[in-house]
Image (cartoon, rainbow, N blue to C red; front, side, top):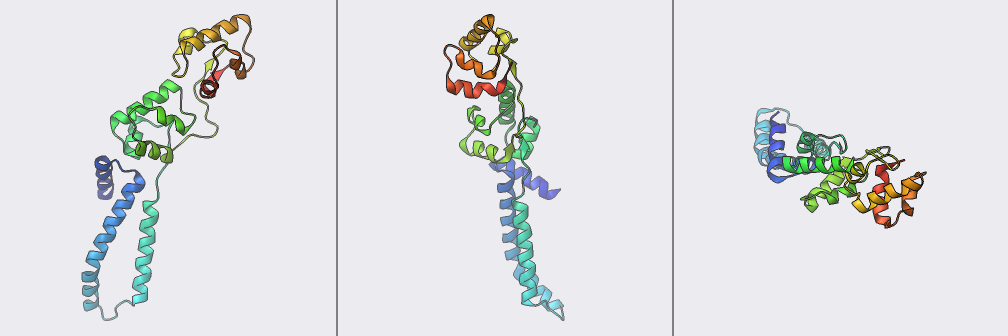
Length: 206
């Protein structure tokens, strides 16, 4: 419990990731070990009739160092599309306003389909964006919330963060003449831009 509280305080103060925080605590423990070790061994040898051999001491120290290193490198990836703001705060050690901003942007999108979309979230520092990309994941079969090309109203179309009023009107005008048969049909729309299409296609259905 004490270890958990100390790690949480370090996260809050320095905005460290789990890996960085565990690494710092491991270093602190090692420093304490090296400071206390001489006195501890001196006391031990003075009380023991059969002191441990140097080889045994070295093996024990190596084992403990390996355990500390393994613990420092462990972290639990976060499923970005199902995580709550509270989970983002706790697991990634970010402030409540930043966590809520990420969730808000995710909801406007209908879900993240690539970690590169984090770059568009306002107010994230470069280190935080990097940390998010390293410590979150999107399942390969994830399907975001989609808008129907053939049935969505103008209001429903423009509600998506990537959809412009001009393209929403072009979609409605197109389907007055013919139905969309495939998502690729949006490439026939006047004003179509390949970059816009690349971002928008995962959020469209027929």
